[in-house]
Image (cartoon, rainbow, N blue to C red; front, side, top):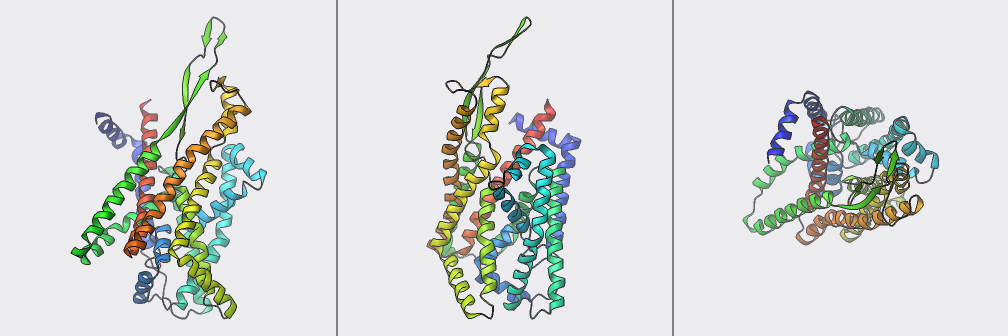
Length: 423
């Protein structure tokens, strides 16, 4: 407890940490101000009815950071940028030059990689903005838009997406933590007062067991996310003895910590992005003039609306992206090479390739635990929704998972900054 208060005091008194936290707070305020500026020509009553009847829009609202519920200029949120980042990281598996740029060219290579992601964001934002505006227009939310009005709204929405991407990157550089994750976190947290008010107004004593079950599930999710995020598998490492002059170096035994869940909340965000984008496109195609296209789009959209199919696909995508992101961020070959260069080895394992294979085998096994846990937590609210018929449980569960993971990551980043200043 003493250590906690000492660290809190250091955070408050340290000028650089104060500035970083203040910058994150300013980014939050700016984002919420932008989320309060709607695009012109909205039918608010029709928009409210559409949100009540469409769970897809509720999930996309979470993913966009809460900018969709009033059709603000940042209604797309950081969705196009995240989708572009996913595509770029998938391409590293196909093109060795991109992988070399991301992993081996240092800071300059990562900056170039990020620039390619920003360029790819533009066509994705174009497609998303056009699809959403046409869909909302045909649902009566925006009325009949002229070509000029559509172009103006598209320009506003695309500019809002890029402005939000820029704010997120500035928050990453000058603040603490991942700016994109913090924006999604801010959008979720900002909806809590509204959700509590709605719950209080619609309180039904007969639903008390359901409320208790939801609170118990929420506490279990928080506890599980914290435990799994903090869990690690220590790999023993020994440094060889070396004699230089009259002194002896090395001979020290330590360990290499391998986290059970190295991907954090990223797989959830990736999976939601992949799930939501096809639904948005299919919703657009259900209103085209071609009857065959309408039927195919309606059939596929009905398939996505099926609870079992949606939950199974969500579960599978979280599993896949947990392994994928772990493979992108952790390279056993690189770790084995660094250990060998520093005269370190894993007892009982030959240095070099054998060490890389050993580390890869351990990471594959422990990642399975983290991936299955994340996937179960992701689909648990959907299962509760299918049993109770309450759609807010599905949305609330995904939001809770993102919030807890982002808070954990932020606490770790602040702890690292505090530790660095203590030394």
